[in-house]
Image 1 (cartoon, rainbow, N blue to C red):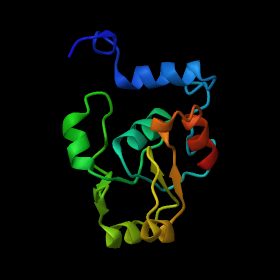
Image 2 (cartoon, helix red, strand yellow; image 1 turned 120 degrees about the horizontal axis):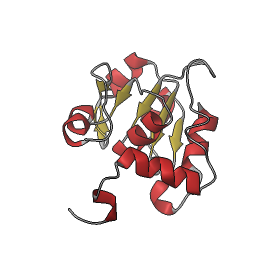
Image 3 (tube, helix red, strand yellow; image 1 turned 45 degrees about the vertical axis):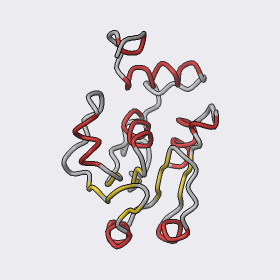
Image 4 (cartoon, rainbow, N blue to C red; image 1 turned 45 degrees about the horizontal axis):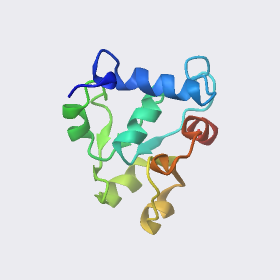
Length: 140
């Protein structure tokens, strides 16, 4: 691919720049265990993984983590992050066993079974919500 995003700028850098344009300083206020109680977050899609890792939060699990590891060059997803299946049909028994504090999704999700396990933060990134980073920081 060619274009301005594919000529020397990583997705992580692009997200950090984008958050800066929205008035959010990701670099100066990362969410870490030192600043807050560490939350057990599960990413329900790749965009949620990107946002969490940009904020300095490693999810305990992610949907399609194996696929994400093989396709993402910008974010290294540790082997400790559990793969919980695909977003359309995550492994509910595994989700319960992991005891998450919160689920994070880059798209609106309305899954009663998941919502019974832990609160779901649906960012609606593709609907133009400008403060996705702030929403995640506030939820964690």
